[in-house]
Length: 399
Ligand SMILES: Cc1cc2nc3c(=O)[nH]c(=O)nc-3n(C[C@H](O)[C@H](O)[C@H](O)COP(=O)(O)OP(=O)(O)OC[C@H]3O[C@@H](n4cnc5c(N)ncnc54)[C@H](O)[C@@H]3O)c2cc1C
Image (cartoon, rainbow, N blue to C red; front, side, top):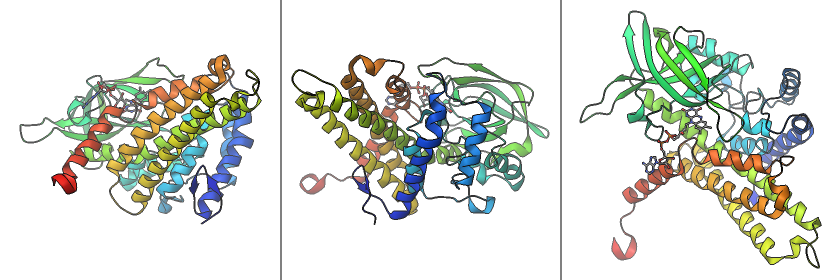
């Protein structure tokens, strides 16, 4: 174990090295490019993106999450959370962890596809030549996808025909393909509806995109599927097994999602500490005031607790244990904690906290989304409570 203090957590040496490498890359390479961008811009110029990708590749920071047989490093879940936490401190890393660089690669579920699908859709993402979206949510609701997905897929000869609408799909426009989940069989009293995953390209007939403006700069999209024709070989996984595919995607994404939120909030708290030490306030500095110190103390404690939950979930996944409930726990607590910490940081900065020249108000808006995306807090509470009730007998006095 290393002596390095990771905000209260002792990381093994190799993860300290990885963290320091990412941190240096974000500070020295990514932040200067971010500083040139307009306040809300989420994408750097093509030249800057190319330059960043090349530098990241030279440092061995690309392909971190790609399986070894496809030329990747397939790093542990623990390494992924370190990468997410550090890279989210810069908005380019937070919005676009792939950047072609950080944990770059396609949605993990593509690796369970056929060799042709991997060749056509997986590898080009690794090479930075293609980008993908994942579309589960619909206007009928996203919290209960198994029952809410009503986009219909019907087989017609050598292709499937998709009809329906997807909502709130991140980075859909301009992507080279998307994994779209559709209903292939209605449910009965005893069986839920069957869902199937399809790989859909924007050039297929019958697909269109509409931007949805939201609280943050990076817009999601509505996707309209109007007799959209998808070749039969573009079914991802087994027909009718799409819900399991969606679950794999969601559970895998939630732990680094929470880590990214913690990274943003930690940066906000660190900024606030720098500020209160040099801001004068009635006979001293802001940092001397108990009201301010309590905000700092509460934020530090809550962030450490949130980080422990993230690391705990990641280490379970790395040990091959089921991580679904742990992922819900750290997603819930990580996103809610990060929102509170950024809110306090804004308060400590006063007017400057909401000024556009600072990243705080952007983080504040972004973190509001994080309590809804990847499943709203209430649904995660439901998952956690159900698991607790199922596995708890009443304890020593009531069991
Ligand atoms: C910016 C953004 C980007 C997104 N990107 C994607 C994407 O790339 N791909 C994708 O598929 N989806 C994406 N989503 C969709 C997101 O996953 C859904 O918004 C989320 O799952 C909630 O679904 P919903 O909005 O339909 O809300 P609903 O399901 O209608 O729920 C509304 C609210 O009701 C409450 N609620 C719901 N169910 C329960 C329950 N059982 N018990 C108690 N309360 C409950 C919650 O407070 C919830 O917020 C994105 C959303 C946003 C805002």
